[in-house]
Image 1 (cartoon, rainbow, N blue to C red):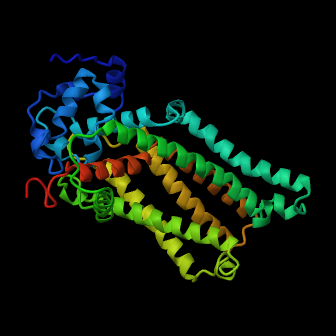
Image 2: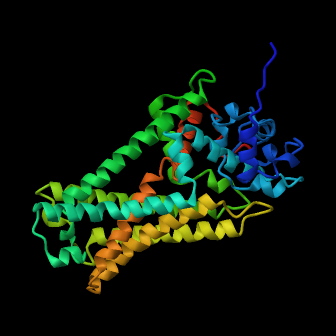
Length: 380
């Protein structure tokens, strides 16, 4: 039966402008597919993805699980005889996939503009401040001079703060969930399942925690340490934050939580986790600047993500240092931290952070349908 191909010229134009400008140099020699140790033997990537991209077949590419199995180690880019930069093309395809599956799509497109991040940051700063003024004016809490100098935690009741960020977190969970469900449906059912749902999820998480796929890269093997530092550091910070929030609502834990002394185990855990994130961000920035072959040193979106992540941790350390130094306007630093965290949280379903969700989804799908190469790698 004949197959009707409908090239998407707008998609191709975006792809060429988003890091895939050397795509047309590819002449299908298959060096990239042979080089990649993560590519399955059956229908290997990224050769077919480059061919589909040249034709502008957006309907196939945005729901292609193989673009998420690629870890952008740039082995293929370093060995490409034509300088087509397959690794960067795959990264551009992942960004297109996020744009397509993000809900709402209009918000994803809006957040790509640098000016939009400034507007979002200003709104994130204004909301807690306006809430504090409203609370003080309503007489819910006594208005004190130091409250409006942001000198203490009393400037805004914790319940109001938790309500604001709880609503934001709820929105992010819904938006991210809709994107992940759309991506899974797009993958389809290629054949009989190899593993059950629980075993597939366990296998995917094992790969993620061990970062074993990164260890197969040759051109940029150091990326494994950077990604592990960011992953485990972020998990540590989330655990500490969860403990603080739970402690405020649990009378049994209230005596054990914030404020802590400097040598409190939870404080130490938070500081170590924050340092791990900063080290990971620094290593990622270094790896992007030392990218192998003709690969580009990251896109604007990549650098914005690293900047936001580092800023969230640095402002957190700033709060701690300001508290120890008894800085009068330490609440200003706290407000900057709240704004940075809000922007980082809201951008999760639409930015580089979405890759963590989408790649996990693709790994679970690949485990379930046997799409992954052997544990030792295809070339073992």
